[in-house]
Image 1: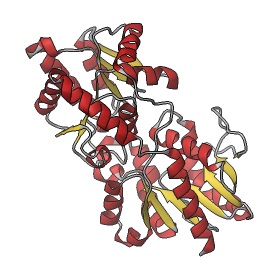
Image 2 (image 1 turned 90 degrees about the vertical axis):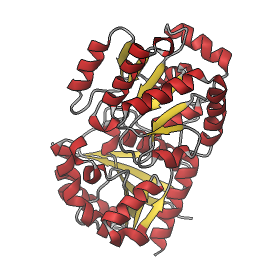
Image 3 (image 1 turned 60 degrees about the vertical axis):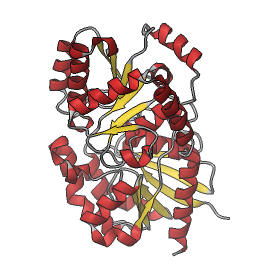
Length: 365
């Protein structure tokens, strides 16, 4: 079989710690195992990790959006198929194209995005839906949003769930305790991983933690926050500073250290207002850490009864859920095992195989 020449919009790779960056890099690693000649195209040179057996071509255009709409289409003629893992396509694509739409929060929660992000997506979404041969979403929740706002997308949508890296492995309790000691949290801690931005709803988590700390100190554990500061993060940063030494914001961690924190945490709490998938939730489950998350968007779907879900805008409900779980060791153990088994259903290898089959089907049409 002749290898398909695949062009990929590589702009997500400039943010390797972001959800879309992790998604793109992990699928590229897996897609190298198929009959594909992969070329990653970017508007400026990449400084991060470059994978073997993949070609990288960089231009020198200050704006990624301008590059996508003006320069990129001219480069696509030499390829068989184009994949954009970053929400939008050029207005014109000379070859069959597939796009991954991770979520529609620029429409459903516009107040949680910068003007720059909204301008880079909203004007292009309708044309993207029209141009794409196939639209991949990482959850049924995103697929439903897409069909609701763009009914003409109905026959194009394919759900391919994200995966989880094999580095996130189940952690027995004795090993968990050793890691906690090495990190300086012998009694455990509550963990949050994600960008400090409005959609992640950290303000409510901090309010819940503060209520527990004041009213139920016996159940109060340190709160550890991991992630990069994002748009409108000043309010959250100010709350963290006022919260005292038991709230520890440690910024971005490399993959090895991040996994250690996942494995050591007593609970993982993720009260996001909306997610297209919610990768940190599955990563926590894969290590055996019990999860409390939002009952919104994809989060109930991907946890499928293997986590406690709450109304994310109610700090009292979140506080009660945290106290309940900290007070019930049997429930913790049950969620730990259920969550780990459930996480095994999410595989980047499986996702890449589904994506490759779509590439082939598009090219046959």
